[in-house]
Length: 271
Image (tube, rainbow, N blue to C red):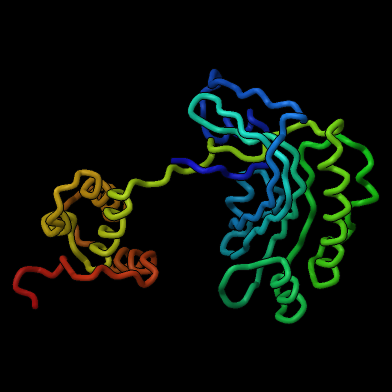
């Protein structure tokens, strides 16, 4: 099952980004009066993903760890066309790009603002309006670019004023694509998920593919196929190839400390 992914692209651009054929059925956008769903939005993306979805996050610097936080409100309706769903509507979104954040945990706008002020984090922010053609928003948009405690307060005030103007002005709403399943990865089956974890653990233990499959002890094609696919991608086609030390470390890092309840990967005779 695919989930909705926020985009800042047209339907045509989404189809092109997904590599769909030009003759794929195009959805018909609803009228403004049909937008009968309202929502508060909150998304957290790395900047590479945000850029691929059309959001203006600036240049992508290799090796730099940056996150994009997106918050806002929307009025929308979903349209099903072919195999995919498309969310059309009007949206007011705040896009905050954050770097040099210390510590871990979920980020919120107040936390980001405080970290900018107190811990030397860096953040830039902008408001995005999509699906509205009115010409009276200029005086309501905030002028700040850097993000801190003061600009956060300005944001809250600006959002309140913009929401009142945009969401209730049906005559100037021209629904645009806000999200779609076209660019969303499919959720793996349980067998694929189990096989991926098992395969990573096997690689981390230094087991060959042949040994990992032999010790699987579960007659499930989805799990076995996932293990084989992982090995072919990480270790190679030879089912007797032993993972290198770097491949073992990469697999261990990807497990994030997760361990299977028992080890199937010890060689015969090893206790």
